[in-house]
Image (tube, rainbow, N blue to C red; front, side):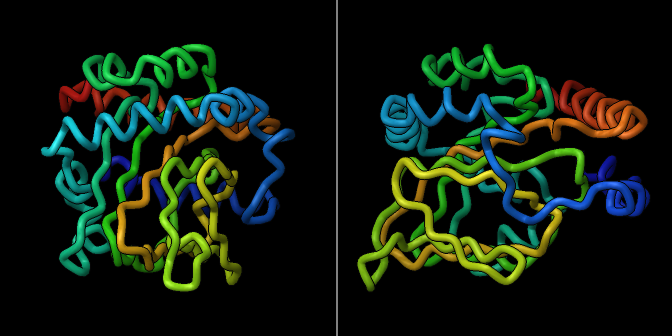
Length: 227
């Protein structure tokens, strides 16, 4: 998947950045109304994520899934583990079966292209970086948000100059093509549901380009046996 991104990311950024002018954080009701389904079920999704963490000790680190991401995933010797459920339209059957509530909601939300349970180890730092593709938005729902030394949520998302600390059950819709980095200042693992969702209301040519890009990435996922 990374080779596909690397091949086309510079061109995509030029095309999208000249046509789309939205802020780093977007209104969920406008840009991803299906978020209410995940928000309403977050306690059940949290229980499924905790069971995954307890029963799946071999959850891979991000850079073990995508070696090209080692610069941000393997930068400090602490784990950032990713339990993939859906990768650009390709579902991972056994993982979906382990999370039936989440799988059922995903079935009802065709604009969700990818879904991952993200497990961020204590004191893990994800260095500053930017996503390549503005046709996709990132929805983050925190399922386990341990407190830091000051009592506030210990996991911090720095996004385009602003700091966000999502408590347990809180969510954010954001554009990951803006510079961002993450710290977990707590003593426990932060667990989040991360969804890549199709950006709505784009011009027709950009919608067609987005569908071509996501279809290409999905094809690579099939070649790699991720489904």
